[in-house]
Image (cartoon, rainbow, N blue to C red):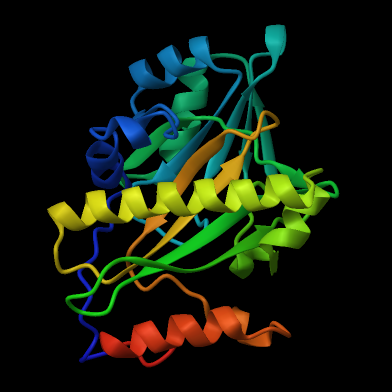
Length: 256
């Protein structure tokens, strides 16, 4: 990848801090803090469940879910492992023992929308040729594997079209098209906002989901070689070809 010319920012916290300064974007961001005992306690007093994530990481690795369990304390989901604990101090110690010195963030839990019973998020690809404008080159969905807390392709997720997924979410054609427009507008605002701080950026994958009220929530923004190669197995390869056309302009020869 010697010729790959696209600046990226790996820190989830840094991305969140930049985006939260834009009022058009802030309402789509879940509350996010550094993982400390105090922050964990305060957020669990406010929300019914949380996610903890490595500040730098990809493919859904290291993500844990924490749920309140009433008088029973808390439940920690780490991959397929489920741990019940009584006290928040014990909960924090267990998390720390599993992550070591790695910096983690803790985040308000947003329940992923479900399409025909499977949790999903949506990936928006925004790309620009050097010196050109940001363009939405495609939106597709990632459907989670039953029993997992992430939707990533690398952990058993399945890719599908936006139309199929939102139809399975209960939307009609008109609502789907309206949602597509809202997604594209939000994605363009995110791309422009990050680009002002990092002018060498040429691509980013923006992951979002929808709650039952159809509000859009930003899950993650990945500017470090967001993958789209599985799209080449779609019957309609329009998105894949468009993404490849842009990617080659800034030295990325494939979607890996």
